[in-house]
Length: 319
Ligand code: MN
Image 1: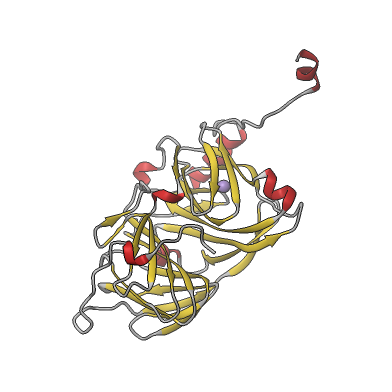
Image 2: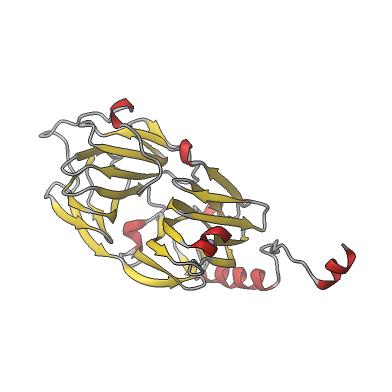
């Protein structure tokens, strides 16, 4: 259950779009998420990469974490590791994740909050469940999205944006049956808090059973809908879409979706960068030479040093 909820009747309403004259986008394909183990061994569902990268550009990866009910001692994360050349965007629906990075950024992400980390020229970070979540167990559900940086910004200094649960812009569908949380970019002129290097829109919507959500969408943006839970239909042709599936859309002016059950979806799109992509693990650059350089720089400690609180026996003797 997403932590940020609201009475949609009190929220700004998205405009009603003309039914017959709007060019509703059709679904080009539906892609099922595949399961992978990440970090210390937590399971993610990953709908892309898997589709052609060009269809997702400027997005590089989507990892759906959970929803999972951890028992005591079971929660896992991703200890210190490097990134260069893109941004990791972590949105926590349930549970608590703690981030720390070598550029001094860090914080606690919880219950509808987002951490937007621009790795840029390079950073080391750790992403771990809170000690309390590890000790006691509990519900964990979140998403990590990777957003590519344009060639010109790949060497930007690392940046950390802490987007609190209350910072997301909340909207209602025109029928009042769907809640839309704008995390970044804008929809119908309503702007979310995330600062981005490249034009994107990133939304989380909760539709009540049978509610319909329509969104004007920039014609030069690509568009994808990923289902976190529940099922419904989307696209001009009412294509069924259920948990763990990603719909990739053709061009058009607007998106339409209708819920069968309570339906939680991520809706995302952006202006494609159309630049060459060279990727290797945690590094995403434009050329193979830049990847080799990233590996060398990481091995030489030039992406930063970790800030693990570290107590040695010598420290203990001193205190
Ligand atoms: Mn990471």
